[in-house]
Image (tube, rainbow, N blue to C red; front, side, top):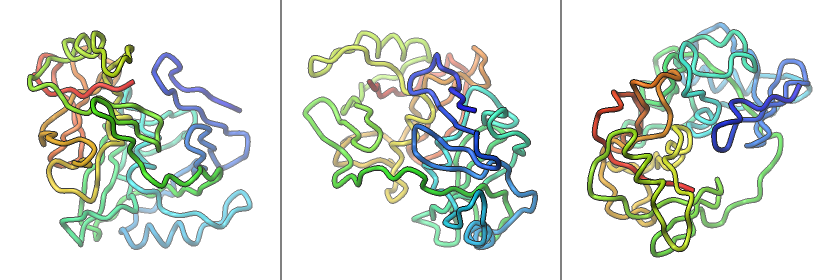
Length: 262
């Protein structure tokens, strides 16, 4: 049945599980293998696993990219960091993505569903795999970012970002207060991005900082707060580290950077 997950959050996940064995993400148009195979695979083995898969009448399955796999993370919970009603039985494991590590040819990106963050590891390691296919094709995006003087609109996600970040650092709640009072290009309603939203800005092809430097110049390769509390608690929050492209959590009293979104 259709399932809207955590509707109180911006851009809530929305899944359709009416077809046995698969999950249709109604936001991204991606169709997911609902149950992850129990066998661990190397990177090459994971690719072949998906290429061989025939499920729900489809045989065009593939290994998801980093940003695709990140899209089904649930940063508000752990062990596993995923909607367990939609994806029951998901192990709290490392899951391969198809995205190679640019500066390490023998490594690739994975997403760790125990806590919920992406990182890179050598392809010879054996991790879990969950296959994906494109169920609803989105229009091609000739140019991802629409860059204005103060803002950047991501054509792919529909999110509009603060282009230049403030020079100071903020504690978790202070970052929220800063974004809430922001007014750029006549726009109000700015907020701190969620974990999955901020991870969409990671540019896997770039070195530190791992972001499009034409669209977002002078971005420091530092930690940036998200609005996502770790495991739904109040003492810790998630940040994205733009030096390495991964994410982790820390005490909300820690001072980090912020980039607002609307």
